[in-house]
Length: 418
Image (cartoon, rainbow, N blue to C red; front, side):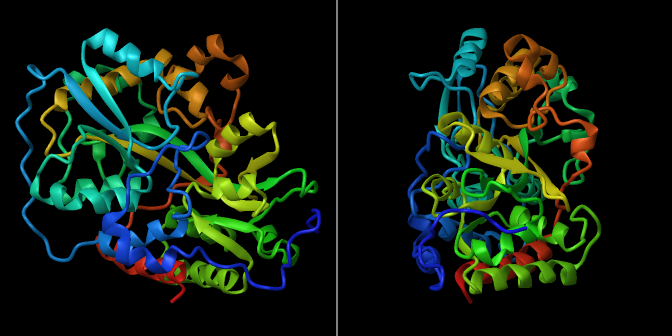
């Protein structure tokens, strides 16, 4: 396939890497909380991009320590809670209010402080891991992180066991999500939203489109490709393109084959930027014309810009992930957080959120509820994927603590240019 687009900048010179990356380790402890970008749930501080991912090197602590004890629950006397979540990951009206949060407050009498506080799994963990290890209050009672990070928190004993009696709507959870290997029976976690990692492109500049990961390495796209700083998505999509099912029992050799290919594309200047959701800025200003990306993000920017980009699962398959509720050990308002989870597992509420965020809802019955909100969305494969769509996706298998450290370090070496 030959990419078609207008006159790009001089592509003979390798594009500069994100300047923040080489400063990442020095300043990560003083990183400011990410501000909400209007178009995307996984936004980072402007320009921070790649540097945020460097925290993975520090994320895996050495040496076991006793698991902290859960805080005493004061929910009965303290009718409030704090919820930390990703940007643009909940329904929002034109005035910046969150209608379903307001509905929860009215229904339960529990006041909610909703913080757009999760800029990246690793940076969020880096800010709170010391308090988590000591069982201290991190300032949030409910947090939504991606399941690979949740598996770490569960393994370390950093999150509280949930009281199923307080979450009767847990029965509405999709059966396929009920028994992850890191938390059988969902004793300590509950899915929030899910999505795909695949590839996207600018339809105006690349009218012939893309079909495979290999298309991203087309020489005519040199310096115009963006990829994600989330290891399991970028490396996962590349591993799939090399014939490895990332949900299978693969080993370090298969992982390193993908890392080596990734490193070559970075070193050769094929990849312009490696970022969190700041990659959307690059797509919008046409610094990049194609990317490894997250499904719901492309739906959202198309809603703003008029169907300019297209997302697909590549022919070799994409990754499937879930972001998930947990209650940190230091939270003194667990029952309030459980009431929040229960509310968002009402099918009508789940459909209202899904209609705005355009990610996969984990709630059975939400599709039927969506029929009354937006019948077209009820058939959207990015929100309610059928078996045929799901067959094209793979969940990156859970890593051991040692694998997190070893493989994460190899990925970070590419990000840091070492």
